[in-house]
Image (cartoon, rainbow, N blue to C red; front, side, top):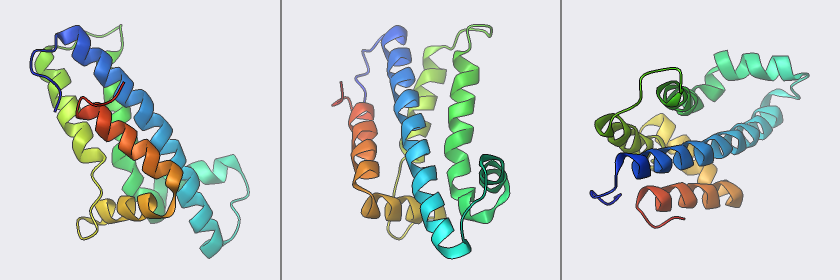
Length: 139
């Protein structure tokens, strides 16, 4: 848990750090899922085809909440919009904890995330980094 005495600026910085690390994790998850997808369905021929699969194919659907979360954080932190307040930042940080929640016997998304963590040490390290950051143990 993040310390309750953190100021809005400190928690906003934490949210920005989480967002940045989550973006890298999302890319790693996409790359990992692409590899498995290609083993089953054959090579993806272009970036455009991959983009369309990420947007529309069921295989990648479990990753969409992560990308949607990142987009919502980006919108909230956009300097052209009203500044976020402490409650909004705390809500985003709480939601981040659920977005990076693997479970062996949970929802389909939680199970897919659990599997990705089990098979890819890079994803495991990224996950641990984000969890530690959210718990106040990260840099």
